[in-house]
Length: 170
Image 1 (cartoon, helix red, strand yellow):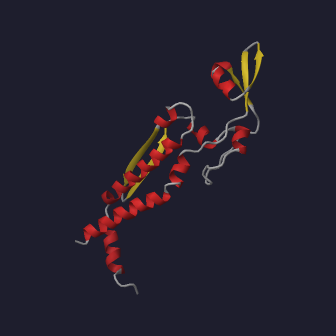
Image 2 (tube, rainbow, N blue to C red; image 1 turned 90 degrees about the vertical axis):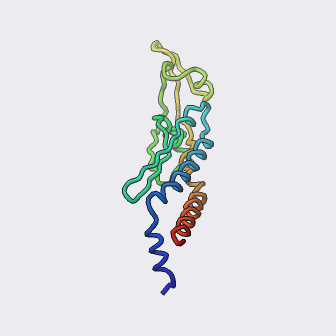
């Protein structure tokens, strides 16, 4: 028998959804800031598209850090044979299928500077220039932001819930 366990359980049951909302928001904003700092792409477009959303569902509070850029997944997980070979740091829970063959991109779909930056092979045809792409390595930014902040997130909740329990015992 643990002395005081009944009182602790009663105090924990008194914790409301509102008591959980503040630390949840604080935690997801921490993840968002870290995700933004992890982005390794040239423009700020991806960095500026990383948002958060916190929602109350009955007795639960859920928070999500996300981007609305369709191509953001290619940065996180990589693409093609290169992504398959270089995907360190992605979530071990992610089941990613990589194409095994290089592909060709028409000049109308990519600017010349990008093709040259990645040293893509170019061929000239009657239909224009095509660049051969073998993909890109994974450059995870979302998963590491959550994983690397797990202890900080726990501390946020621990501190806040300790404060709530103390307040409820006065």
